[in-house]
Image 1 (tube, helix red, strand yellow):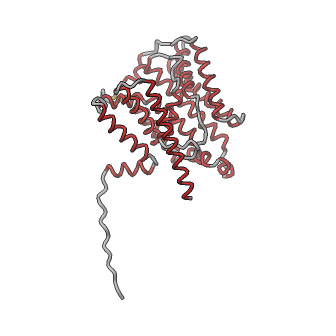
Image 2 (cartoon, helix red, strand yellow; image 1 turned 180 degrees about the horizontal axis):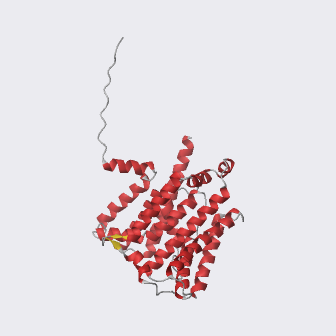
Image 3 (cartoon, one colour; image 1 turned 90 degrees about the vertical axis):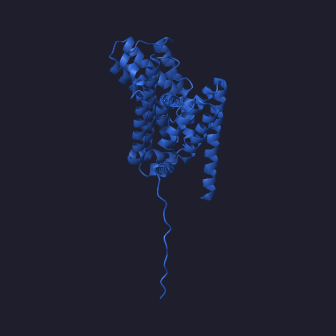
Length: 336
């Protein structure tokens, strides 16, 4: 009888950074994180003003509206849908808050609740058109984009509304410890809640099932129509919240607020690794995608790049992200 002795290979000590990296990889956001790191390194070389504490917190504050709305859009896209109306819904919610407070005379707290309900209602209309009207998501939300923008102009007569209470303005101007913007804490709390909902709640996991294969989800007993209606309402409510944050920052409800915002929102979601074909996407990836958009815009501004060229760059980044996603799906399909 021969006894074979084996010596275990010592495991190197696990560093805090490796644990963080493993966590990011677990959530499928290693690609977007690598892109963000490379972008930050490049801009730090090109501009001496980029990698400063004040500028970095300025980036975080600039992306708050984008990040809030992108969270809801990510759920919609994971389900296999699309929402082009978020920019207009954000403007409509901000205008409803302005009109109900300054013209109707309701308390500001009530005006804020009504604005959020208006955003959820716009999302519900999208969901009803898609689920019961059998209207394709692209067409339904494109119609809402136009309708919500038109209602915003009707309510405001094309003019901005100001004169909000000081505490409402302070919601986006207050810094915790004179360093960290309070609205950044709001974004982090929303994303933590979104991650918990999608990972641990059955209704959150149903979103991935519907996006992965709608027919299989239906045969599994999932109420596909209710899932779609629910996520469009969530997306509408978050668009409304983003509109209120934007109104607070501007201290004014602008009828043109959020114009073109839907493009940045979809860009953030796709760059963050969410597949446009549905079934794949993460909360942390979406947040990183929003940071990439914010860092890119901030860096281009510091480099004095024209806003026209910035649109070209953002479009190229979107195209690259979609191409990488498509090629990745094709490779995975060949392996299976």
